[in-house]
Image (cartoon, rainbow, N blue to C red; front, top):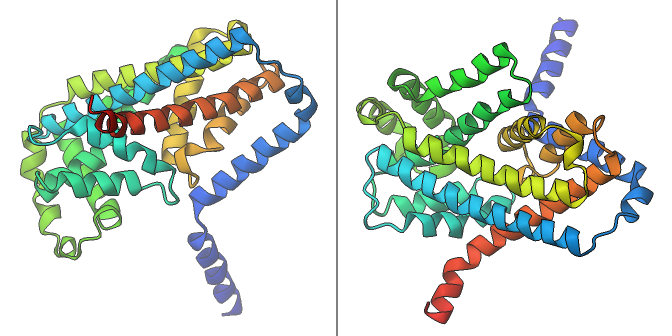
Length: 316
């Protein structure tokens, strides 16, 4: 009896551990150890005029990627039957994107949902929020096989495109609503499952999102170009194939999208890149590029969030 109770206690403790937080902490330790071990080499990195030009290019591509991501979301909302005529979808996306850096990592979703349901039904508003990360996930998976062209990896990654077929999509929407609805919406009447039971007709009416998926792939590629600019700023881009770079970037970006407890995948993205490419590239230069890319992408998010406030301020 004592042994059984002890096992129950152990499994209970494991269940209560926040796996995402644990993985994020491990990544922070790994990244911190790498920075500490390469501190002298990092401090010797020189950022001159050419490096600044590359980093400015990184900001430009990262900024453009946010606009493209916003447009993909607009296409997705139209695809599920939402009427966006009275909604400035791109403005909503850009204004709320910066909220992903707030603790919890869900406040950009919450803000978008609260804005959308002023014009759209609660059901469509929620589906647009739940399907957008899935669309990004599939777009990233499509690019992973280009690093090795392994047929097994290619098939497994491209099978993710089946997620948006009516039967798969219906199942996923239902499960996502059960898992995420109360977190995003905080609406008590969702507990009566009326909304959960209404997803079948809506999902079947939604056509396969070819256009949103295509634009989302362009978003990931543009995001990658911002990363590549940071890599080239430290003259290490030519030391590894472009296919390997884009494959590793897509994998790290996906893991950073799914796993992190830290805002914006902080620490997780960098650790995956460092672990994957650390044996091919000079570690200090790679660390410098990763740190710069984090600053570049964050600055681009801030710029994107300021577009409409600045336009309103100057009445442009």
